[in-house]
Each structure stands twice: as structure tokens, then as C-alpha cells.
Length: 128
Image (cartoon, rainbow, N blue to C red; front, side, top):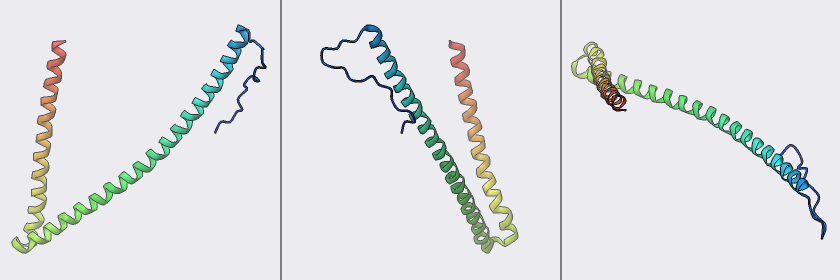
């Protein structure tokens, strides 16, 4: 996994003592090896995350496209089903209007929540 070989000091012989400078050199060498290993690990991790993010995005976009097509089929089916009751031309107007009314309700609800959230945020800013 590592591109470089660790430059570790040879093992101590019996009765051999290291001086403080040699201890510090050995510690610095091991710290450098650890840092190189950590950098390599983080690079590998970032590459993996990048590749996974790309495939997740592609799968998400594909799923969104299929959901869109399924909803369009549902709308077309609703137009055909309602068309048998009130006629195709009126159904072609009624079904999209019903969908637009639901969208309007959702949009107004979202706007109300945003206003409430902004009021709370302004209230908290004023109290600080």
C-alpha cells in the first residue's frame, strides 16, 4: 500500500544504549513514516469517496428520471380515465389543473414555513 519503504533503525544489540539525539532521530523517522502512511491512506480514501459519489449521483439521476416518467404515465392515465367520465378535452384541462392546485397548496405551505422559520431566526438574532 505504501509507495516508500520505511527507513527504520536497525534493532538494538544487547547492552547497547541510545543517546537522546538518536532517540529523537528514531522518533522523527517513525513520525515521518506514519505521516506518509496517513497521507497515502487519506488519498486512497478521497479517491474512493470521489468514485462512490459519482456513481451515487448517476444512480440518483437515473432514479429521478424513472420517477418522472412514472409520474407522467400516471398523469396520462388519469387524463384517459377522467376522459371517459367528462370527455377527453375537459379531462385534458381538469387533470393538470388539479395537479397545479396541489402544487400551489404545497408552494404556499412551504412559503409559510419559510416565513415562520425566518421570524424565529430574526427573533433569536435579536435576543443575542
